[in-house]
Every structure is written in C-alpha cells, then in structure tokens.
Image (cartoon, rainbow, N blue to C red; front, side):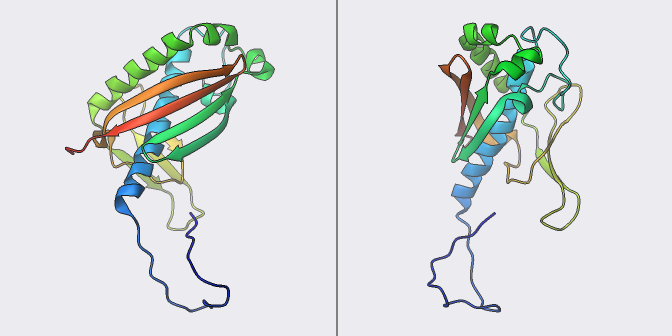
Length: 195
C-alpha cells in the first residue's frame, strides 16, 4: 500500500512526524469491491467447470473447480464497490482444454448462472477472515470465506476486504465480450446499508 502525501521535497526528513488518516467509507467500498472480485471469479470458475472444459485442468481453485481465473486473467482492477477483470481466451487456454467457442456462444447464460451462484452465496451471510502468517508486511496473507462448498475458500491475498458477505446486499456480474478472445467481467456491489 502506498500513501501519497502533499509535501515539497525537503519538507520531510527521517524522523519527521506525520499524521495519516483513512477515509473509512471509501476504504470499505474498496474492500467490498475486492471481496466481490474474489467471489465473482470463484462463481465463474464453478459455472465454467460444468461443461466448458473438455479435459482435466492442472490448476484447481479452492473449491476444486478448474481455475479459469488463474489461467486466463490478464488484469484485475478494484474501484469503489466494483472489480473489473479482463480474461483472454487464447490458444494456450484452448490447448489446456477450455471450449472457448462455447464460452463465447453462451456468454449470457454463463453470466446469468454466475449471478445466481453469487446470490446463493450472499444469502449465507458468512464472515470473511484474513489469516496472516506473521506480523510483517512480507508475510503471507490469506482471504478465507465459507461458501458452503466442499471446502472453505482460501485465497492468497494481501489486500483489504469486507468483514463478511453480510456487508453486501447484492453482487451483480456483467460479462462483456470485447472480441472472440477477450472477456471483461464487471462486478458491481450494492452495499448492505442495514448491516
């Protein structure tokens, strides 16, 4: 994490005292967007595992589904109440067994199934935990959430996150086909103001 400060060069020196403050609402909106991004990619992995792979993939996600996200993700950007992921459906992914043509053809159906899965998971209201393996910034950190699957989702991640699914009233995913090889996943959070 980087903290930018408004200061001229030379105004600060080693040992200078500074005061930092956090815009709590803004930070929480980023945390919800980040958590929603994890949930959305897990839901997408689950949906795609149900008929869009023609052979066993080497990489599996925390629930044991083929990890489309780790194979295809080119970028991920978190903004307040939102996460934007870009996926490439290239030749390498097809060689690994993804039926890319079917994904492109059924993109709206996939989007609908992802949103149904997210609604189901949100209804659980589970807590989200950050498991830190040490006290230093360089120590490993893991996002954890029980989504009612065969195992708890545990994902390496050093970012900030919501305290639980109960902070989110709705997560809506929109899948946008940019071209035959590029998909954007727009994940939008409606916060639960009644929490």
